[in-house]
Length: 255
Image 1 (cartoon, rainbow, N blue to C red):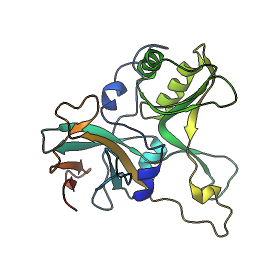
Image 2 (cartoon, rainbow, N blue to C red):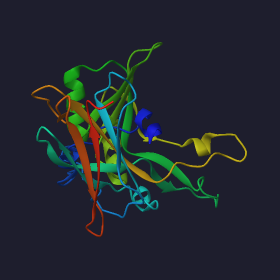
Image 3 (cartoon, rainbow, N blue to C red):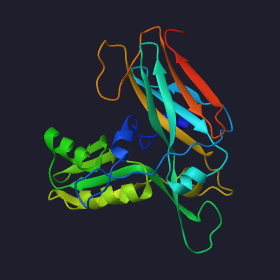
């Protein structure tokens, strides 16, 4: 699981379920995401703290048997709870989403591998915080990455939005219409088993779903942040297709 903790493409998904409902009206209404689907797990969930010692981020991962959700660009639901009263159902997304690639190549090169919810833009100027919030509202997402260009005006802005192939395509379309945008695209997320020139290549990552969970020891965390006490816990529960629940818990204050 540790590899997913460090991957910038595994972006914040908490509470995006609210953005994944309602009709798309051709430009300004909520973008419709893929309907969540529960599956059977091949192991219990896991939950770990990001390795950065100053991090206030947990990452929950569940392993699944096959690529059904990855090929369908489809999330599942997972319950997130804490000792300070958090109790919410979040969307947990595949770590990669796949689109068939023509040409008859063998797996894994018979697919292109993408972020299930990520879009990016290049701009001809730096955006103000209020403009970023407008764009987040436009696509039903959150800013997840930013990089200012060093040799020209503007920068790269990466967004985590609604999960789904059609949803990311619609977010890309909306972003491409903005006056300050010079390029808009979905985020490709090619695994090392394809990029490597080692023969034979390393194995591809297992089929997993991942969710980043920001947390705070403060009394009134905002947004998507989970309130937890310094010696408390955060627990995730995944209810499988057969109705059986599987749980993992992270305990704070324990070496």
